[in-house]
View 1 (spheres, rainbow, N blue to C red):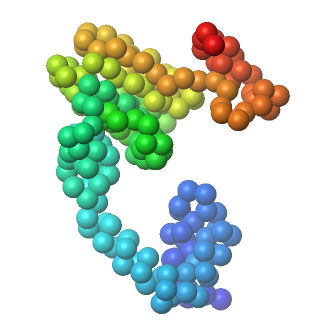
View 2: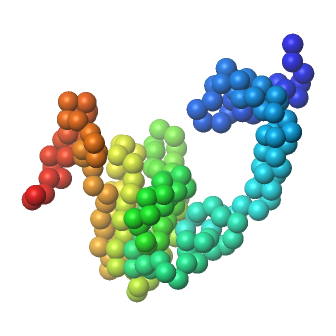
Length: 197
């Protein structure tokens, strides 16, 4: 039988993505066994993060400053805005080190089933940014889901009166992928997106 504090820790950990009740119990036990070296420092770091982290008023990224370090970096190419669904997508693109423009986080995708409409996303902020004279291209980096593609089409329509090129990430065969293991949708997208070699 565990105490209410341990139960609360397990319940909170179980709310994290990828952790169910069993994984949360294992994680809680691991943290408790390493109170001095892990649980205490983790609790301190979480408390400090809760106080320090802000949402960037320009792009929607999370950082300890506003505007965020990406938006405030004068070396970034202000002509390019890459639109992503969530902050995690921004972080994934930043990990590659291959994009040197700016970002815009929508905060989700359009979804009639979940009741998410255009007003629930940061689309107006994107349109306002796209109208700036220095912006020449908006790159839609949406997930290849029905909701992601619906959102991309909606944004493309909204950007029609802005003087920008609208592009999207390529879809198709991943690097190192074998055709036999790919799903039909990925293969179809790869065939449609083919280009001269």
